[in-house]
Amino acid sequence: MRPAAVAGLFYPEERAALERDVRDLLASAADTADAADAARGPGKAYLLPHAGYQYSGSTAALGYAELARARDRVHRVVLLGPTHRVAVDGLALPGAHAFATPLGDVRAVEPEPAVLAALPQVVVRPVVHALEHSLEVHLPFLQVALGDVEVLPLAVGRAAPEDVAAVLDAVWGGPETVVVVSSDLSHYLTYEQAATVDAVTVGQVLRLEGPLGHEQACGATPLNGLLVAARRRGLRPRLLGACSSGDTAGDRRRVVGYAAVAFDEPAV
Image 1 (cartoon, one colour):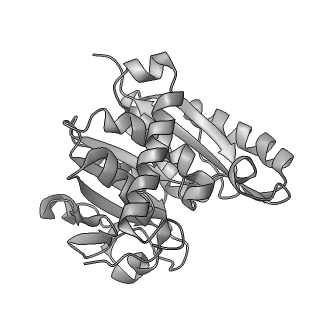
Image 2: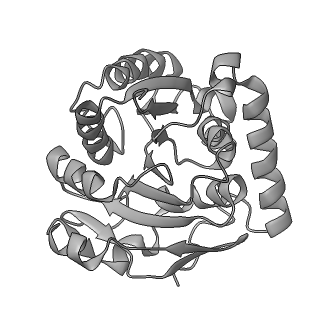
């Protein structure tokens, strides 16, 4: 079991308060979705932020409100996020069977042994996950939106985009599987500077144009891998929303940027 590390810091640690907050965020996101987004199915992949809920929860909820409409279909989430505390070469699995949150436990799975044997860039490093928030903050959203879902959690350290894309290709799955890349955008620029920089970054993502730099997105490494895989598979990016902490709960002199982007599979 990997215990919750940032409950009470990034999101409420009391079960009722956490469930209420997530449901409120999802309801607000569903109310603001335009008719076209509300009518279409969920994306195959998402870029969603990982800051404290008061800052980026409303942006993350834009993606999870879509996924909630596919609750009866989506049962597996490949969740990738950057490492903030412990460096690692490659992509790290937690070596745990579950992640604990105030809402209960989330089942954690690994690739099949034969698949894992063909991916030397994937390692098992519990210490990388122990205090990492970039994956954890998504779990309560997944629990409320999708219910009994299993997660394949990958903390992404030093890795080439092609290495990340190779892992995604190996675990891509079918309609039961969704990929979520966890990343914020620019950090600690002024509100006006961040708006300009993040608009460029979002434009690149919508054109599937990489690689992005880490000054553009803290999760640039997993995101660059997703962009490679998306180009190969003909995914179509769709902006759900973007803002910064200056729009939600932060000081406009030093903000962090956020975006929610869906990546839709081509029509058959």
